[in-house]
Amino acid sequence: MNAGGTLLEVSDLTVTAAVMDRSLTLLHGVSLTVAPGEVVGLVGESGSGKTTLARSVLGLLESNITIAGGSISLRGEEIVSPAADRTVSIRGKHAGMVFQDASRSLNPLFTVRSQLAEVLRRHVPGIGKDQIAARSAQVLERMRIADTGRVLDSYPHQLSGGLRQRVAIGLAVVTEPALVVADECTTALDVTTQAEVVVLLRSLAADLGVGLLFVTHDLMLASDLCDRIAVMYQGEIVELGAVDTVLLHPEVDYTKRLLAAVPQWNGATSPHA
Amino acid sequence: MTSTSHGTSLVGADSSSAPAGPVLDITDLVVEHRREKSRELFRAVGGVSLSMQPGDTVGVVGESGSGKTTLAMAATGLGPRTSGKIELLGRDLDTLSKQQLRALRPEVQVVFQDPHGSLDPRQSVRSGFRELRRLQPKRTSWTDDVALLDQVRLGPEMLDRYPHQLSGGQAQRVCIARALLMRPRLIVADEPTSGLDVSVQADVLDLLRESLADSGASMLFISHDLAVVRNLCSHVMVMLHGEVVEAGPTEEVLNAPRHDYTRKLLAAMPGARWREKR
Ligand SMILES: Nc1ncnc2c1ncn2[C@@H]1O[C@H](COP(=O)(O)OP(=O)(O)OP(=O)(O)O)[C@@H](O)[C@H]1O
Ligand SMILES: Nc1ncnc2c1ncn2[C@@H]1O[C@H](COP(=O)(O)OP(=O)(O)OP(=O)(O)O)[C@@H](O)[C@H]1O
Ligand SMILES: [Mg+2]
Ligand SMILES: [Mg+2]
Image 1 (cartoon, each protein chain N blue to C red):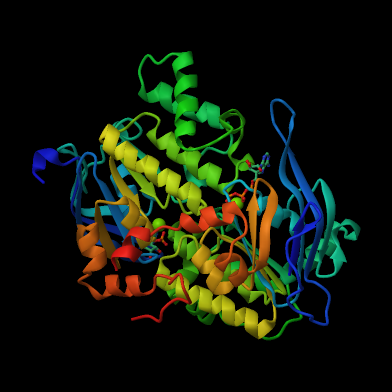
Image 2 (image 1 turned 90 degrees about the horizontal axis):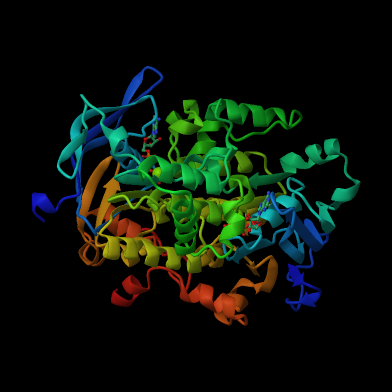
């Protein structure tokens, strides 16, 4: 991949957190790229730093967390570095984020309809009322939501976990940003709905050229969806490559252990390797 | 376990003939939500019956929006109920005062679908545990904080963290640890391991299985992961549009599914590509 074909470039990113009187390193010099139309899976152990990396890209870190080194660029423009944070200018318009807890993506005080309208008004200059209504309904239909009317008029707490997650994905993609960062965005979905959403995410990448950074702890899901996979372990990317290479010929022990722990369908979980 | 929808029995025989009565006995539960604008009623749970014996682990799987969470909330008295009868630990919810229901709380632990949302943001992990212990003032033996966290594969440094300083999977494990601390007779867990990678999940499932075996407690386990349900649950109940379409012993239902929707669920399990190539 040449530099011109890179949408997102994370270079040597180091991120620290202040807890009590100590400083913890959450990411140790992480590097990663996403090309337009490419789906890159970020997998790894719980607590390995996946969400931290995802949020760094959008500049949405908790207040006790600091970018200590490295940088992030979107289409060649540096948006994150220890010295600067230009993520405000890209958020929503050029990059959308789906949070791990849907309650973070959605505002409890507003209906789904008004939240979609608000994002569209903010990021699509000159958009009219009819267009807002049409695009809102359309994006929910694309999320395989059957009764879009009811869902549009609902507040988040009136939706099931899976509906909330699909609405959150809808909010992130309705403005058709170049990059979508999705953090565990299908964990609350049953497998059939998940399979449909995966098809949809693939089509966003294939048809609209959206680059997708797809955070998941589910290797099997990553194997269905992604072009490349980055495996994180304790704040580092320990393995990065094409899906088949990583899953069929894993190099590092941690990836091998993860694969060995995948529940077997005909029996119990195999013992850890 | 026995379970029916609309009076049709879906399960043949009772699994266990434990001496004590059922831990949870639901008869013809209906839950309707009112739509904000049109004031129309939306039927989220449409006539579900379920009887759980001590020691049963019942997996609830089904489509997103099929009423799983609504069922769990109603069953524990935490959510609304339109009609139907619920007996929780042998007590009819209709006859319980708010106070009596609160007294049952330690014995019925709920692990919610949204772990971050269900932890108090102003409370560290340590002070959360401390508050739970105060709920059972007469109890003398407790698992200490560090051992408790270790069981869910979290280090002692997590004790001073606040919820927003935990990763998604760490928050889920804190919720599970909190539930187990109380030594409940019934655990209702809504997607409790959905955010965990397989290696941590395997340990947490082992822990749940052991704790249940030790204490004889029962669990209603909501999950979309059929492999996990198969691994953990004695029975499974498949929900679609607010109704139970199929229920019975796990192996029976998953090996020889009778309903189309169950077959669809089985076919949609992720990882087919990888399994094939391996
Ligand atoms: N605000 C914070 N302050 C201190 N530590 C934090 C903070 N946020 C996250 N951490 C820690 O940083 C590490 C990485 O967290 P992160 O949320 O990125 O993990 P993750 O890979 O997304 O895990 P999961 O799969 O469980 O969601 C974890 O050990 C977590 O406890
Ligand atoms: N407070 C409420 N007001 C109105 N409708 C509601 C309310 N709570 C839930 N619903 C609706 O009831 C239906 C069932 O929701 P429930 O949360 O029980 O589903 P679920 O099976 O848990 O789904 P998921 O797997 O997505 O979490 C959904 O269509 C949801 O939108
Ligand atoms: Mg995370
Ligand atoms: Mg639910």
